[in-house]
Length: 180
Image (cartoon, rainbow, N blue to C red):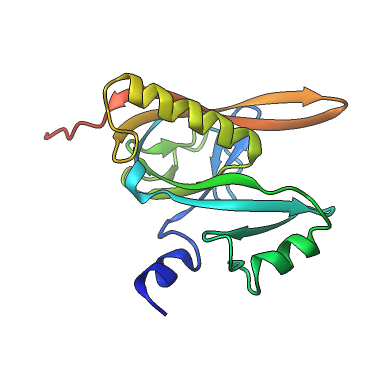
C-alpha cells in the first residue's frame, strides 16, 4: 500500500458530516438547521470519485481510480452489482467552519469555529460544485489550488412527485486570515 492508496481509502479527516435540509444545513445528527454560515474551502483537500447509486434504500459505491471500488472489490464488479446504473462524478468536500453555529433556542454551540465538516456531493450538487469552480476561476483564482470563503445553505427541489434538498454554494471570495 502506497501513500496514494492510503489517502484514497476511508474518508477525509473531519469532525463530522453536514446534511442538507430545506431550511439550511445541519451538523452530524443534530437537527438544528443553520443558514448562511461562513466556511473555508481549500480545494487542494478535495477528493474526487466516480459514484454509482442503486437500490432502495440507496446504496453508494465509489472509485478514485476507475479500477478499485473503495468499499472493496473491483470497480467492474461494483458496476455489475449496481445493475447497469451509470456512475456520476462526485467530490468529497471538507469545510472549515469560520464561526460558531449556535442553537438559537438553547444558545448551545452545535458546531464550533475551526471544526472541519465533510460533504459528499450527490449528482445535482456535483453540477453546482462545477459552477462554483467556474466562479472561482472568474475571480482570477486557480480553481485547482483555491482557498476560498463560502456561505452554505440548502434549498428544496421537486420534480415528478419527488422531493429533495440541494446544497447552495455562495462564494464570498478568497479566504483571508484575520488576526485579532
